[in-house]
Length: 370
Image (tube, rainbow, N blue to C red; front, side, top):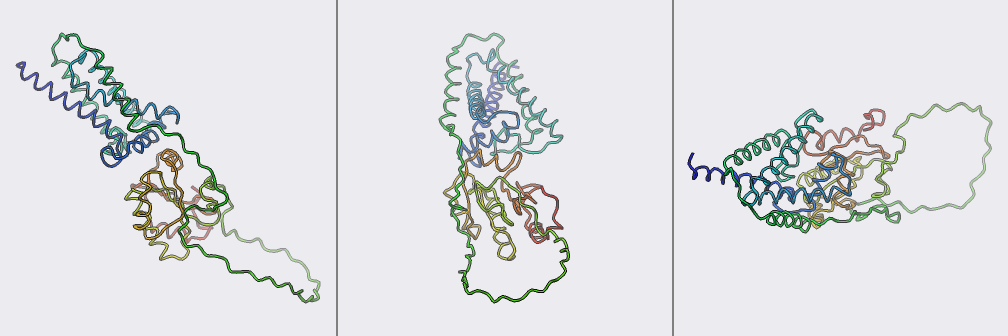
């Protein structure tokens, strides 16, 4: 193999590896389009990937940004010649080996190959097995590149490495600054905030002060009353009263939605159609993620109705939605008890037909509490 051929192959490998690392970093800063919502994307990465690994809420925001900064820096550094063979290639290979080990462990624990590994964020969903194969191929290319490069590596400028690394990490912190945790305080003075749903108002009560005529009462033998059949579940504290004061009273539909999410909009529209057809359909309450909140009017216009809602920050939203869950989330509740929880767009997605059957079932026929 001639030197020109080796040089051509080496540069091809370097460009491919650089592209993979830069794309991986940028994708973790993107929701649906490149760099469209860095804070949302990084927060989602933290909740879905780092929290299950045991990272605390205080440490995860720093670790995620440093990790993405290192990925971005390695993508650029693989294209330069300072300490390429002595430092950059070994570090890049080690990082990929750690990823492979982690993904293998996660796949073994979960007993399957489902979900998004987070390698390319929400921009390019990838299963753990796909990510493992991708990383092994990249490790192979790095090994090939190592042997294609000259055996003797000349000196380099270590400051180039450190400057690129710190610039990349600093850039990530500037692009997606860490935000203080949002404090959610209950508002006892207002049952629901931003109430747009039409609510029935009680009729005026007329009090008659005229004394009633007294009629004699005959002695009768008191008989024990037959026990009443339970027609509704016992009250339960759901934990959502800080968002909606009436959430644990009667039947309710609690939805976890994102204003700019197409699947969330479709679910809201289906719920509106069900409410039009069924007079017994329970009141709807919505918890919105604090992401693209300027789209809320457009969201309700598409849904065909406006409902009481609250807005909470990204990370608290994912936490209240539940570990491993995804949007849209729809909970059917009765007196604070959760009887059905739909979430995501796959096996557990919202099922309108099933929902109608469920809300019209008497208490005795309801499934066990979820």
